[in-house]
Length: 221
Image (cartoon, rainbow, N blue to C red; front, side, top):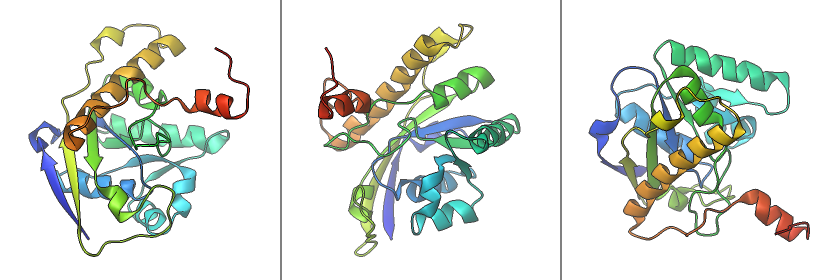
């Protein structure tokens, strides 16, 4: 099993709707974040990519706990977003991984985020609570299918203050606004993780699109 050390747990809202935005570097992360959310007195609901539901243990946990699969590029994806919005409207908690998938940063720092969390927060005027954790890679390494609960692993979790998105409220939610807001969210998560790790993050956040272009010889500038 795992032993959690949760820092600043009082920053986790006890009531009302909000988005939990954690870092993501192991397929076992949803189980761990779900356990932390439960320990802090809220029922976890994930907006998670559909492929996670096929991962051993993780998929079982997601299905049994009523999580919300997001199937991109089809109608089910829209239905998933509607389900998440209903949870928010009813005062629930939705956990969204802003990175969209496991970070591809070689040192497991958060990579460039996607705009789903920022959009939902701004459209529904609800807070985003950044969360960083470190240690789940010892339970299940990135891209691994092996899980190791014994001996018990230590997982450190740090809860942050609500992300200040006031500069973006009332603005047209175009790509530029959402990307700026997402950067603020990712900065908050990265700052928490740097504190947990006692290290400085990279000067530039890993951008999967740029690295894909470099690898295929299509990167320009």
